[in-house]
Image (cartoon, rainbow, N blue to C red; front, top):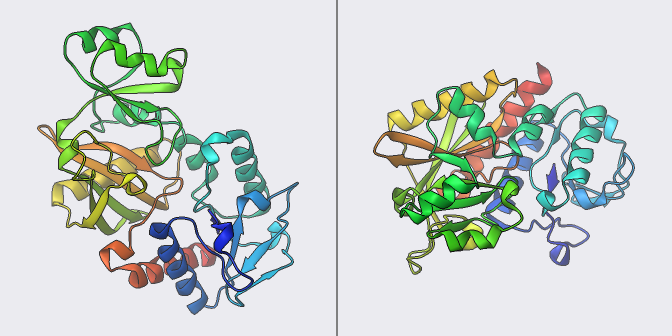
Length: 310
């Protein structure tokens, strides 16, 4: 299991994880797997060299060990890496190293490679999935800004809301001047302030959901990311939202990208549920936010166990 390590807090008997929203969940995952008799190892992707890890934490024994070869791993879970979007050649190299070494990489390497580029939204739209109107940053966007339409500018490759900004006038495009090809422009959906529904799945089986909202104290903030001060609360999705999320997963699989562990982020618009993001690389599960951490840990352990035995 690759994790974003909080190196300063790691000790000889504890592997510290950078974000609490992920830390509690990953320990529950490990607990569930260990209960089924599996050995679980935590690794910091910064420790991966030429096809081998320099350091590895054996969670069963609660100690760092001399790493076994990656080929000894029956399943490699690409769960969390810090800053991988800023070093994509190394990230893709890591994914390929894992794919060469292990028969099971979760999510599937083809899915990881496809999902890292937000232009996947257009591929899903062609499959009938509703998304906010999404455009390249070009003269047409400038003209619509001048006409009073607001856009959210999103890096084509980015994480945790980094670099996402609201453009309300043509002058706001100066923030991405010279980098227009690195961004998408999505029409701003006012209902985003009401919250973003995040539905977690294992395969096509729904697990739990949270409602994420931007920080209440900042009326200008539209991003719901927990790392930017957003909040998350237990949410019970409507039947139409569950159905739509499964349609997203089916559309993704039809692109030749197997889905295993995913989080589907939606908002409600006048047209119904609308996809904001299909997170298939390193989705935060928010299981402990739903007081569902232990149960979800067991479920993901049984899901992985079934893949291994199958």
